[in-house]
Length: 55
Image (cartoon, rainbow, N blue to C red; front, side, top):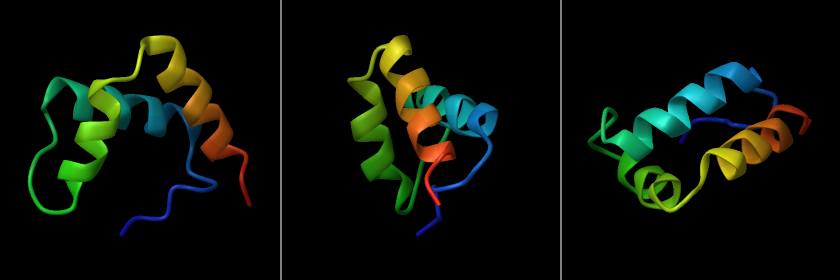
């Protein structure tokens, strides 16, 4: 499982949008795709900001 805390915010935003759009598939990614699918753009931005600032 990938470590999300401390990742670059821009990377997290792009990754969540990719999961939501179905551009990232397979393996353990399925769980993140299920979560991201239901998130609004504002929620993706806020969640990415939160994760990027965790230590």
